[in-house]
Length: 216
Image 1 (cartoon, rainbow, N blue to C red):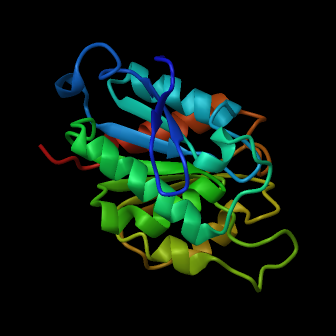
Image 2 (image 1 turned 180 degrees about the horizontal axis):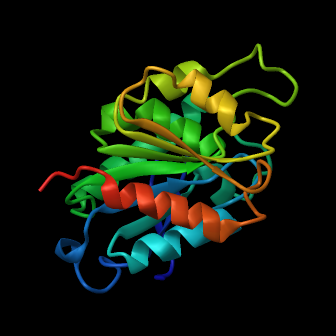
Image 3 (image 1 turned 135 degrees about the horizontal axis):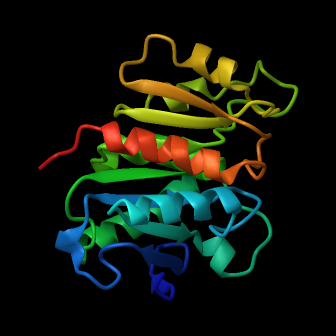
């Protein structure tokens, strides 16, 4: 994995780490590009994100992990969702302008990062969304559902969800996605952290990536 590269956004610099083709072999050698964001409680070094990064990079994907500006600045509280979207969009537009986002594009992340990916996928022209531990609702508050964000992704969507996730068990997520074309839910052991079985998370993500219809 290459050292982080800082990318300017309206909210300050974000940090991008690259693994797989594109870090050394050149952009054209990748199957596609997978861009992953983090949750509200951590950066992109969580066990699930690292496991998915390693598995996808080994399978020929260029994987970019994006640390939002608030994390780069050392802040402990994430800004409001619209600001997360602004920074994320600015990073991806800069990467596209720099020739990094050639080929098929899958966006994703864990928890809050998954929400950002769902909200911006259509605007960014993504070919798919990989959502890890999507926070369907606050713990114990199923009436405050965020199902509209999942259903609005507008592209093929995979949700990898812990079986005991207090923010939405796999069956809850599946119910929220009922009738949505090209959407799938993959249950793995563990809770919202997805730290119990990161290899299972990576296997589910890679299986979905391998069957995803890709642009030539």
